Length: 250
Image (cartoon, rainbow, N blue to C red; front, side, top):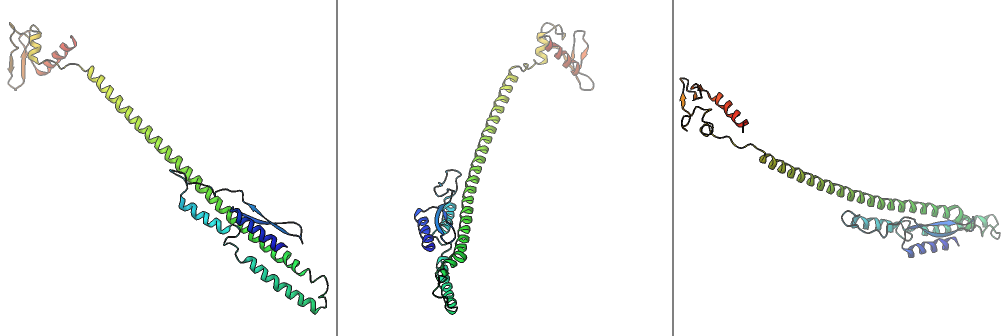
């Protein structure tokens, strides 16, 4: 009864195509099994564009999960081994009962049940527990891969936004500098006139007579000097000072 119940539960899990495990239920002596799908998803996960989980990784995880599903490669041969153990245990038990003269008692009928409770059921429970842990680990890997892919997408989005903001700021600074340069050029003072033009504009200041240009002479040290209103020679430094004062009077 328990063997057929377990095999039926395994077949149900195989038909469903879902990840899960077979769990025992019922009191001792009347153990039955049923297939319970796992709560985790992942079978329908799709590859997200630009940062989703890679199809190669998903395929590998899918193959691993299929091995641990009921009817897969995991635990294959365990049920056959349990059946062989049952036959041996019952045969050995019957020989012992015959030797003891108890072959016709109800003890002979309880040999198979005792084997199921003490050997087969604990073995199946251990097998299904390991199956559940393996499937849970695979689903956690799937979830972790999805989280990492999402984090990578967020990081790329942040970097793209930061780069765009940096370019916008650089463009704004360049435009501001160009605007300030244009304003600076608009308020820049005009170039000053040459000394001869200054003298022609202010003849009395530079000692010009009848519109002639101021006399230019050189002293013994080779320094150019100009004749002022009093006829005194004016050095280049003094000339620059006079020119500056004339600019301020404009």
